[in-house]
Length: 349
Image 1 (tube, rainbow, N blue to C red):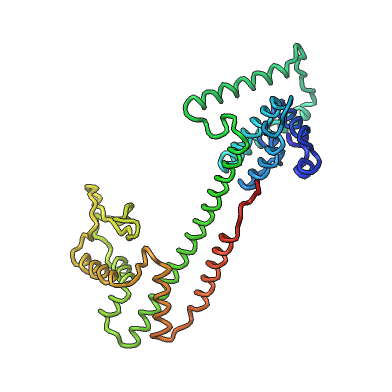
Image 2 (cartoon, helix red, strand yellow):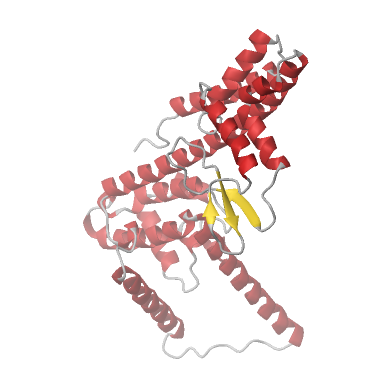
């Protein structure tokens, strides 16, 4: 592969000095077939954004113009520009996948051409040396890249790395991206916990209703007490009539409200929030009114709603079969909160 000429990451971090790092990056940057992996001294495979960020910080500490005074400023500026362009390509997951795919396809074509030449038994024709033909191709390629870069910058700000930035600005940008990654991971964790809490809440409501019915509670009391479950069953047992379809509403009245459902007439495209059948709509309205009497809402506060049901099961029915599931959920939440509170900045800039 084209990265065989690059020093391994461990060697780069351990024994390459600041001046050598600039020389290595400038030498790699003059190659006509340079790819972003070769510029950042990374093997050609998919890397996590955090790994790309760490490698960029390790190299930028050595080649940033603010860290190289004297006659090396011009070389350091060129090296940092190459490094920044490679980082912008590899940091985005989609961009990195496209770049790696192009790199693998190019390598595959080169291997096929080489194998085809060996199979024919004929030697490949050498390019005429002329007046430094490879240098001319490299200059043309750099010129095209500059033109593409100028065209992209003319349409907008061109991104963070299109202009020279101070090292303090680079550090602040890296911290911002690190916070974005941490917030994204926390949001995904919250979504998983919320989905699990909702599933346990539906399961607990079914158990509660069964126990209430066995205890001899009237149906009206049971349906009003577990209104979300009753509403779900009414919608499942009494679908809209022919010519209508039902879907989830996109915009709830407020952030804490359940988005609800919308019924659409297929012939005209007209939409309405009420069930087309008046009798079914009255049952649904009773269920919604009964749900408003609860202390917490399943749609907006699933975790608190689940705690209320579990307390009801323990106190009124002496039912403890869900205690293991609740303990496991609480353990996951504590581990998530402790990790978020203990985690410091990934780098001490």
